[in-house]
Length: 488
Ligand code: BGP
Image 1 (cartoon, rainbow, N blue to C red):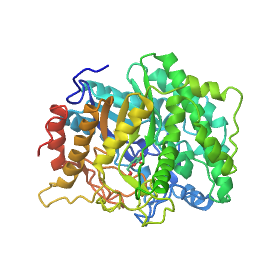
Image 2 (image 1 turned 90 degrees about the vertical axis):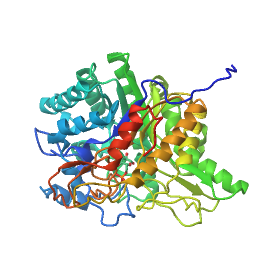
Image 3 (image 1 turned 90 degrees about the horizontal axis):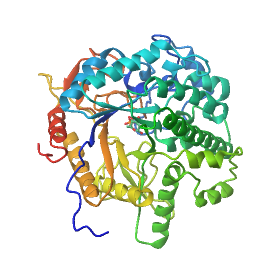
Image 4 (image 1 turned 120 degrees about the vertical axis):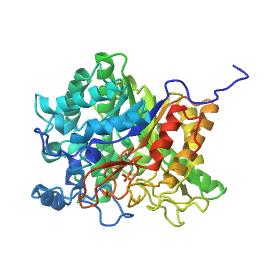
């Protein structure tokens, strides 16, 4: 219907805040009966631009299991949110956060993954965190699985490669949904569900000694298990509390054609489809037809059990959340200079600047993505990650002048607003890493995203003191004005 009016800005109750993950934030990796996780056996990368998701091998795992320290495994120490959560949440409240995205470490609740009763100390920790957030009216947004699972399930059944893991996951989600039924409303099932096609960090399955085709087969099968687990968790959660909002989470890769040559445009469309396939399954409740061709041409057979298709249909998500850091370019031959990113393997875009880590910065791409996702799915959208990883300098008088971060965020928020004016239903924006934390891809500390600086270096030295950066007050003003005042 023609209305002669359109939204002028972000809706009331827009969820402004920040996003984190347990394995990058918490530390306390071996406290209170928590089990070892898959994230805690990933060694810090030595080459910051050359990162792969599948770097855990049988040998590196063996080495990690015999190393009882956190020296080479920074995700074991995080930034010690485990002991600093009160101070950290207070700082978030000072910025006016409406929402805080965090993940539950599954191995705090089920240390080995296959126990029948949960670990009370782990449950009590998240009670304390949620109660602290409630004090300040900050809405928790909880990821159930963010790049980690109990390592016990890797050792026992090769992680998500096994269908058994669905049962283990649902035992865990049943416990946390019930325990926090009145403390948490917003949930996400799997962080960046598309990561599973890249290997260990997504699947918890060791597959580095497989031939490429067998590897692909394993990863898509593991992904299918996650799709089923996610769809069953959505149904389980809604039964426990019908007010729950349970979403999917995609690492969004906006792809542009290198030229207007139709073959390049088609290559970009294909690349975009291969990114949106994941949300097609989780939002529409079925595999899109083009994947049948992809599976057939790549010799992949997804083992499905009777009823799987119904499960996917019945477990469609309530909203679609995504991370957005960059865009990429592709051409028919994919022959141009390569760009880099957490999961982007395209070509360089001559019109865009890159971050220190080579990620192509593209605020307009965020608007394009928002419009694309809204057009395709018509479900509420939630930007649950966006931000700039940079090397921040602490001045002698204890300040961090991070104007570059303000510039980055400002330009992205401006584009979000344009999409909202176009009619996109946007629920919120939780920028990535409001407090400096360990990098997901390289496990560095020196790649910082936060409004709050944490005094810790790559080797884990430092006082862990929290220091407000210039961007802290800027974001406070953005939130207070509901995204209207972006001035410095
Ligand atoms: C996403 C992950 C996050 C996060 C972010 C930034 O892919 O979901 O966990 O860390 O990327 O990546 P990085 O930490 O590697 O800079």
